[in-house]
Image (cartoon, rainbow, N blue to C red; front, side, top):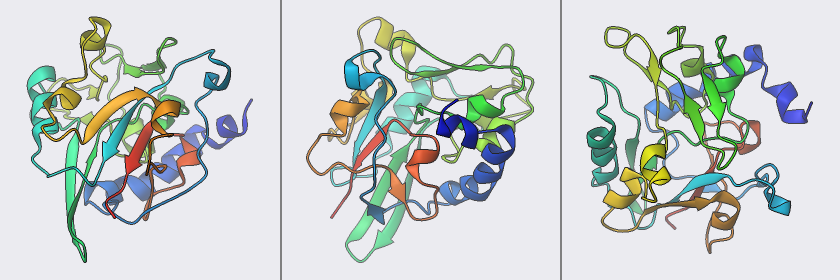
Length: 225
């Protein structure tokens, strides 16, 4: 059992998530990005496994919400559900944005707390999948996820839903809908260890959130200076 396995018990994951998910919902993480120690995706050092992730260039983003709109249209969100959210905040350097969805973490807290094992990671690319058909709607994952990624409308399907990284499109050789829709190339994707080598890239460490080492999110950000 790894060090991360120990930290991500159901009790600790719920505790961390409950304290931080609300912060994401009100836009606290926008800006204030800082460099940090980045944990390599498991196995990729020797080429054994691939971990796909998102690259978000905050300096390019214009806050048009095209990424969220494309995700909604492609995935037919239930009423009141948002798989991708675009936060904004006014700073001394002008308005900055943060586009965020499920980060397909290497050590997903959602999977750690799910009592019916509705969450799995795809072996070939590390995408965190959720099987809504076996979800019992307990909503543990909503509180456990530090990034507030899973969403739930009890009155609709009665099951949790979340970003699937557009696996059906990717399996046909296409790009995720959010990436394809971005008009300024602020949102990209690829092997997360390669993305982390991009100029100006930092780990997603932001004020108000736990360290990236807790879930090792597959998200790389180029912050707005």
